[in-house]
Length: 84
Image (cartoon, rainbow, N blue to C red):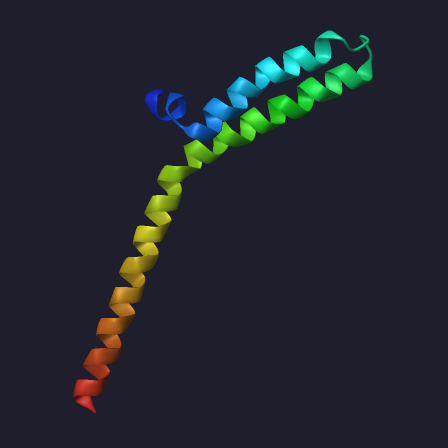
């Protein structure tokens, strides 16, 4: 697991930079449940960005397997045509 793929991902960078905006926004807010809700929403966005980067490798593996399966089906159809 390489940290570099997370640090260089635009989605993660954007979500992390959102902390600055969230901090500015919540600075003037009262300390009640709404303030915690704003931070919770920011944290959820950051978690989704990190999770999407983590899932990219699995997405590539799935795409490769699907492409290989399609190629195999194509070959099998071609062989059936030759036999017929």
